[in-house]
Image (tube, rainbow, N blue to C red):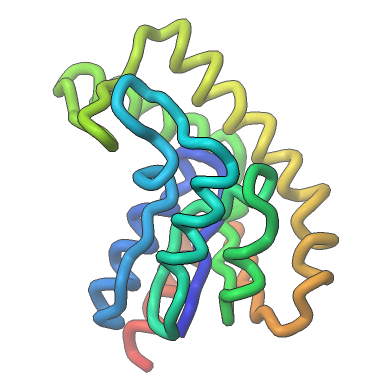
Length: 172
């Protein structure tokens, strides 16, 4: 079982992927953790592609985030299923804002020891791109998925859809 969980920042990708990986007893691959180095330095697209290819080798994993615009379609090529978190944009933005506030308040340590940056950076590099990505995904992902007919795509448009999807896999 190889499942890619995708959606904009704040949609719940990591939460869904962790829950599935735990329930199914498979590896969880958090692509953000591969991408972000100390001081928020990004690895090169070539390095990320190599690390993602290495991490997605094998038959049992759940990944969150595809980074397909940066590294191509390696995750989709290797996945059996996609859980596309296509939740209402207002809900995603609210969750992303709330998560950012909590992380800043609690000084939550993220990948490679990073902390959430100043609000200006959060707006520029996190919140605005997530807002754009939510709409962009709706335009571009169906075409992208069509290039991979082997994929079973689960387009999850509500919390109820997410719960049903999780329950269906957890009970299998």
